Image 1 (tube, rainbow, N blue to C red):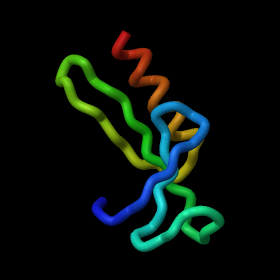
Image 2 (image 1 turned 30 degrees about the horizontal axis):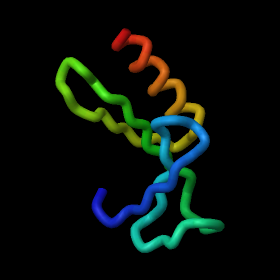
Image 3 (image 1 turned 90 degrees about the horizontal axis):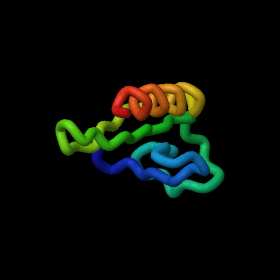
Length: 68
């Protein structure tokens, strides 16, 4: 998703994704979030996009617990 801008949230590993060309701040972008988790088995960062913050938090928590 080249050209999109992300901003940190107060939740570790979860970022707000803005539309291409958006400057951020108080914008009219739809709420989209990207959750990231490091997978030590594949040595890669796994990312997934969600329409809601709660969905992103649940997915990230499940993957973090599965890795342990």
